[in-house]
Length: 328
Ligand SMILES: NC(=O)c1ccc[n+]([C@@H]2O[C@H](COP(=O)([O-])OP(=O)(O)OC[C@H]3O[C@@H](n4cnc5c(N)ncnc54)[C@H](O)[C@@H]3O)[C@@H](O)[C@H]2O)c1
Image 1 (cartoon, rainbow, N blue to C red):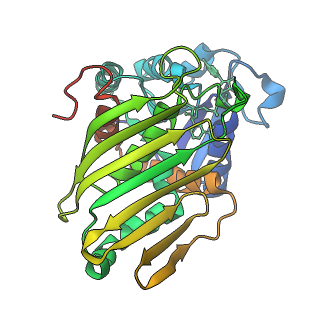
Image 2 (cartoon, helix red, strand yellow; image 1 turned 90 degrees about the vertical axis):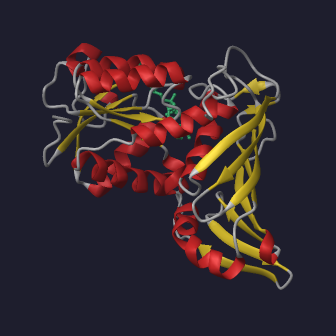
């Protein structure tokens, strides 16, 4: 038997910081899952917004009411926290990046299997409205503009300014694990196969995975005969928050830009530029989490995780780093 999820999914939020509160908003808005408790090492009951608050991790782990934990702790803590929770037979929904190498990921899946629990990798970017629109419009776009032949993703966040890492970024490690997981999860929601060709890191602030910028090149293809090369840049040093992905359609000399910051899709070719899609949402991150939360509910309710999706993303993301032949 897999996953003890009944009609009401009782979740605990582990790590009630910046993103834990987005989960809270999305869960409360949808109201199909229940926030049954909160655990965070740095807060106390009065900061838990009226939710049940666990004084210790053991209290949470031993609470039979909780069948699923959402792990929103700092990135370098995900793996240890996830392993403990799984060993108590509870499902995990883990913020990206779930792990820092494939050995950890494989151990996580093994632990989940042993304890009949599910693993859901939380890839919020996949649910950004302009990406969702593009994904579902691909058959029509193919008819009009031909196949996709290349892409370029640029993800910039203002996290390292005047030689200093901003507090907001302390939990994120570095630009590649932070934004690379967003870019690759987005690409895997569009293409079947991605093979990382090269990855270079720019300056770093300290420790491992603490790059301030990165560049990567990769090959992609899918069953729709989209095929080609793409490049990505992740960048924490330009003091701007701006993210976009361009897809080129060589047969018609067209370029479609997904503006992830403006939530728009624009086509440009020799006839000019045209807006194809624009989302209404004012709070981008909340829009992501509303989509993600609904996907988590649907998956857990039907007794599924997204273990294989995570495997594809992290295999590709870490392939040049730990010597895995992960692209094989
Ligand atoms: N910040 C973003 O925009 C964003 C977006 C999407 C995903 N994420 C992911 O969410 C995760 C958390 O990021 P954040 O920005 O919310 O960080 P944050 O620092 O705001 O929150 C982390 C929280 O975890 C708590 N914590 C630390 N160690 C803990 C432990 N062992 N057990 C329980 N609680 C613990 C901290 O006290 C803090 O409240 C990261 O992995 C990040 O990649 C962040």
